[in-house]
Every structure is written in C-alpha cells, then in structure tokens.
Length: 267
Ligand code: GLP
Image 1 (cartoon, rainbow, N blue to C red):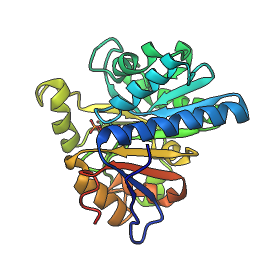
Image 2: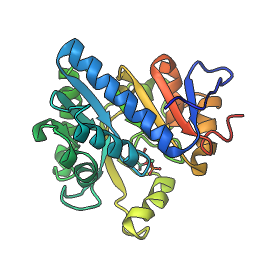
Image 3: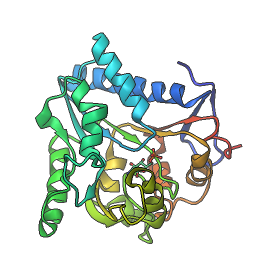
C-alpha cells in the first residue's frame, strides 16, 4: 500500500509518510518489518527485531501473523527484544507486556520461545540494574537491532523513556533502566488498568541508546490524540523533554508512518 503522501517537514530530513487510515499505516509498518526480516536473514542469517506494545501496533502484529499463516514470512531466524515491561509484574498477569506479546504475536508465529525477550518484571529490585545491563549486553551480542518498531506516548515518550531534564547527549546514551512513569503515562494506562490507583507506577525500559542504535526505526503514530506530540517531536526543539524528538538525531534511518489525524498538526 503506497503512502497517500510524503510530508516534507521544514528543518527535518526525517521521512514522514501519511496514510489514509490507521490500517494502511499499520500495513506499511508490517511491510517494513517483513522486509527487514527477509533482508537481514539473507545477509546475516538472522534478524534482530525491537518490538513495541500499546494499542497502536496491534494491527501490525495481526498483519505479521497473517503473513506467517500464509507462508510469506517466517520468524524462524528472528530474535526479538521488547521495549519495556511494567515493574513489578508477573508474566502471566494479562496486563503484562509479556502477556500482550504472547497474545498478539508470540503464540501466532514460528518464533523460538527462547529468542523472544521481554524485560522481566519479577526480578528482585536489587537485581534490576544487572538485569537491565544484561538485556543491553544480549542486544549488543546479537549485533544490535536491525529494526525497532516504536509508538509515541502523548508526552513524547519512546518505550517508557519519559520526558527528562538530561542533556540530549546524556539521554541519547542512556542504557536500559528502571523508571518512574510520568503522570500522563499513568493517566493513559487507566485504559488498561481500570483506575489510576491500579496503574503500576514503574517500568523497565530499553534505553534510548539501543533505540537510536537500531539500523532502521519505524515510528507508527495514529489517531487525533497523537497529532500535537507528533508535531512537537518533528518540529519543536530536539530535547530530552520530548524523547521522540531525539529520533531527529538519526533521521536518515527513521521513518514516521502516520494516518491523517496524527499528521493533522504538521501542516
Ligand atoms: C505505552 C508503551 C509505549 C507506547 C506508548 C503509546 O505506554 N510503553 O511503547 O508506544 O505508550 O501507546 P498507544 O499505542 O497505546 O497509544
């Protein structure tokens, strides 16, 4: 499905493709992931994928699962690393991102269970730093991510890298870590948890270093609630206060896939 239009964004060499609707944008994301799998497996015998959760990528996973069922895509040679996980949480808790990934993708494709990595919400708190460091070492040992699928929080977060007062350089270099969720993120999570009190207020998240280090980054943003932050990330200052704005520091390898409502404030 070709993009309806390619949007030039003044002062940014980011590729921004706008689609008629969210389904078409999701299909384009699945196309790109499937292409990276094929090309990486052909070149290196393996494909290392960074995956995202949230409502936005659900259709991407439906599409990828349909391709596997149709025999046009295989995860046989793939390894996956998810961006984030609530902390603490049990993997069998239906609200965990491990459970989300199992439901949406892992149970539907031919991916080896021991190559589907999700940060572990059960490690003792004293061991979270070592667990996070180990997660980065695994990705590094795999040669880094071939592609990272991203969504964007309404506050500009990527993964659970929340707005920060770090310098751009410090934020860009940050490793995987345990963080406190931002009030906007907690408010948005009421949708899944049912009430603000029930929202787990912390999470483990892949750091910005690994995200920006991916060889391709696919940012998928759909719906009117994302319009303001998409415009801010693409046209405002590059600052850790708007985490997704750091994607402009590696713009050549980033593609933004938007539907019309999410692109509404880009002009
Ligand atoms: C979630 C996830 C992010 C996701 C973002 C947007 O909390 N941790 O990885 O991109 O927030 O979510 P949604 O797609 O549901 O709007």
